[in-house]
Image 1 (cartoon, rainbow, N blue to C red):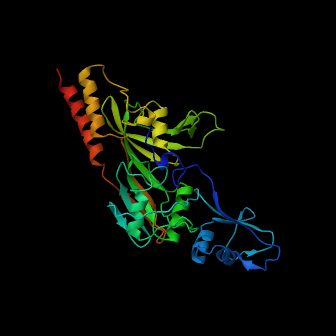
Image 2: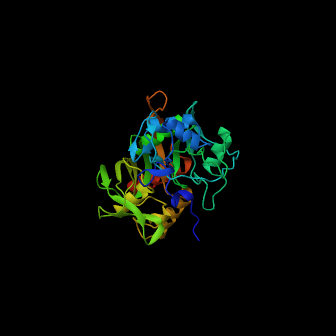
Image 3: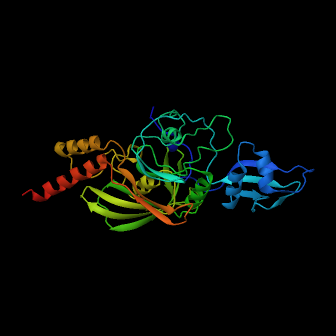
Length: 353
């Protein structure tokens, strides 16, 4: 049976089905006296602070009778109050673990971490330990019990796949979490990835605008849908960085965030990610039939034994200062080695008589 991670099965913030998901719902009693909505909610959500509720209201996550309201809204008998977020509620107990983190930046509101390939982001489905969240719980000194209603480990406002490396932003308080979640929801975050894909892409740059949804024949895969009524809207912009004939190094900029978006989109145009087992990237898609070439490809797979995809750049408005910040990370050693090997191979082929 294939080993798969939680984020390959479930919806998580930032790379997900778009929509608002209900976390809490209240029907105001007939005998309820007039009361501000923030005070009403804090009195009915004992494990959630009034400050957090006020932050949620400020970021437009609280609705009364399906309309966004302000903190001073006075509740009335029969009102339906909903606390919604742009991701599904999670309630797993988190075990803090002392796992080294590559922290690129940290302040009182957030931290940016460079996740290595092979690390699962969030516990679940057989991965309850040694995840990024376990490491963050230890680093930040927080954990969430199985009965806790306050989403303390909602600090992760987005994620990347287990075998994708790169940058993630982590919220350290309620204001940062709610503000960053909103930025991901409205697609104002800058996300640039570098990938190695099979084939020689004809254009120097292009855009893939194609709906993505789960593949009904394989629940671990996603696919492109031509029918506009199926799947979810997804847009990926790509630009060629380097060509090696049989493979191409590209930069991908996400306009939307869908599960496996780059992997699915590039595969849909005939250029699956090198080493991506789920989308055909571990087959020899381009090149010769000779044994020497096949051995070269096998050596490449061993150098980078995962999909060649790295979340290189992350930019967003800082939730406190509102100033734009941008973080860049080097390609990890396995992808650097893969690209260097292809560069040397291409040079050798050019120099052959």
